Length: 135
Image (cartoon, rainbow, N blue to C red; front, side, top):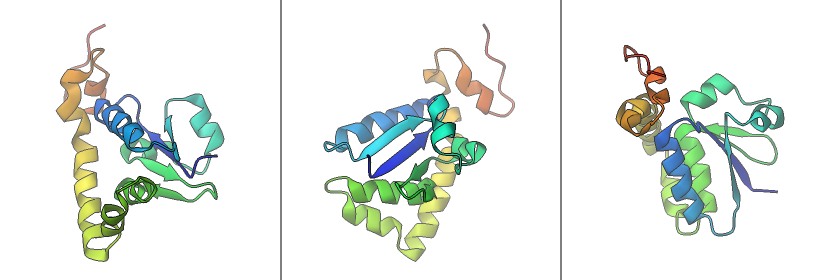
């Protein structure tokens, strides 16, 4: 059983790239990475609000506790070799507030930055006032 399960938006190219990097930093496979669009995600983690999880990455520990956004990244970092100090810094009150703001800004804009990487145009579905993708 993993120490943490991370639920991410698999239709987001930035999220997929982050997950690929995370896998390289997790040699002991302490973190399970699960695409929110996988049917098993909702069945296994009914306590996770799917809409919130599509906005902000979620991390769930074996006891069922859920962390979102920058706090999720802090808990991920605590499990990765060499990332403990950065993880703890993300939890310091002033830095925690700033990290949450920065994470929120990145999360809100992630489709806008990576829309050119979406071959099928699905990223544009998440960007207000963007053209509808062509079939």
